[in-house]
Amino acid sequence: MKPKARISLLAGSALLSLVPAAQAEDAPAPPAYLVFDTETLGGTFAAGSGINDIGWVSGLATTAAGAIHATLSIPGNVLDLGTLGGTNSAVEWPVKNNGGVVVGISESATPDPLGETFSCADFIPTNGHTCLPFIWQRGAMTQLPLLGGNNGFATAINDAGQAVGWAETAVHDPTCTPPQVLQFLAVEWGPAPAAQQVLPPWPGDSTSAATAINGAGQVVGISGACGDAVGAFSARHALLWQNGHPLRLPTLGGAGWNTPMAINSSGTAAGFSDTPGDVSGGVLTANFQAALWPAGGGIVNLHTLPGDALAEATGINDRGQVVGTSFAADGSSRVFLWQDGSLYDLNTLVPAGSPLYLVGSGDIDNRGVITGEACVVATGCTVFHIFVAIPVVGGDPGSPGESAARVYLPDEARARNLARLHLAAPR
View 1 (tube, rainbow, N blue to C red):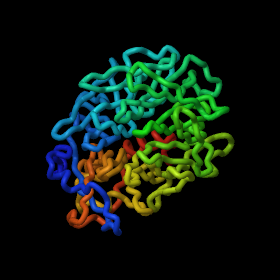
View 2 (cartoon, rainbow, N blue to C red):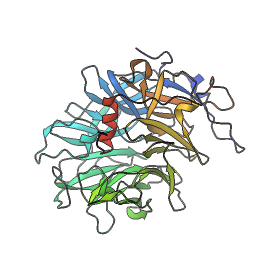
View 3 (cartoon, one colour):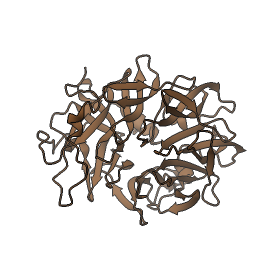
View 4 (cartoon, rainbow, N blue to C red):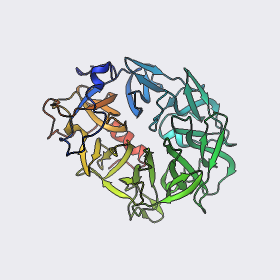
C-alpha cells in the first residue's frame, strides 16, 4: 500500500516556497516539517543518502527483481543509475554536487581474486565480486581509478568535481582481518576523473579513508589499522586533510569508530565517535555517539535521543543544522535533527498520523530539507521508502506529533541495522 501523502520529490515551486532562504536571526519558532515520499524502482526498500541545494536526492533502491541500484531522484522522476557490470550499486554517503554529478559504489562482474569482501559488502551484496568506485554524469556511470588493488569506494564529490573515497593498494597489510588482505588508502579524484591524489594516514597508521569533501577542498575521514576495511580500528583516528596534509581531530575518548561523515563550507564536520570503555579483552564494541567537530577546534558530543544506545550524525549544512540516526539497543532507529543546541526526534516534528516513520538519516541541504529512509507504517514497517522532510517556518504543519509513539522495527529491519553497526542481535 502506498502512503496517502505520497507525491513526486519536491514537485513544483510550491514546495520550495515552504523553505526559507535563511534562518531569522531572532529566536526561531519550534521546528516543524512536512514529509513527502518519493517514487521507487519497484522494490520494497529505498533510502536517501544525499541531497543537494536544488533538491536532488541521491541514494539507493531495490528493483522489482530484488537488486539494489544507485538512484538519483529529481522532481517527478527517479533515475536508475545502473551498475558497472554487476548486479548491485548504491550511493551511501551524502553527495552535495549541484550539477547532478553522483559518486558511489558498484559491484563488478569480476570475482575478487583474493576472496575479499571489502567495505562494500556491509552496504550492498557483492556476490564474491570486486567493488568499484563510480562517477555518474551526463547519464553514464564510469569507474574511478584504483590504487593498484582490486576494490574501491567513492563517498562524495563537490561542485569543483573533486571526489573522495578510498581504494586498495597492492600492499598486503598484516593488520588486516581476513578475508581483507590489501591495504587501503584515502584518495581524491579529479577534477578530471583520471587525476588522483593519495591522502596519507596519520603517522604510524597503515590505512586511511576519506568520507567527505567541501567546496574549499577540505577533506575529512579516518585513519588506523586495516581491520576489515569497514571501520572499527581502521577508524582509530578522525582526520581532516588540508591541502593533502592530515590533521588529527579530537575524539570522545574511544579506541575506534571515530568517523566524520560530512563537512560544511565553514569546515565544521559531523559524524560519530566512540567513548571510553569500548575495548574489552582486545575486542572493540561500538558505543559511539553523534559528534560535531566545530571549525575552530574541539569536539561536541551530541549524544543520542532519550533511551537510545548509539547515535551517528550523517549530514550537516552551512547553517550548522545536523541530521543523524539514533539507535535503540535492539536495533530500532529514528532520525534526529540537531539545531541551536537542541536534539529533536524528527518524527515528533511532523504532522500527527504521518504515514511514514523516519528511521534512517541521510543528509540536509542548505535550506534545511532533509532526506533519508522511512518505513511505510501501513505495511507494518516491512516497506521502506526515501523521505523528503521540508521545514515549515512561520506556518502550521498540521498538529506536529509532539508525543509521537516510537515505532519498533520488525526483526529483519532491526537485524539489518545491527549488522551495519557490527553488533549482534540481542538474545
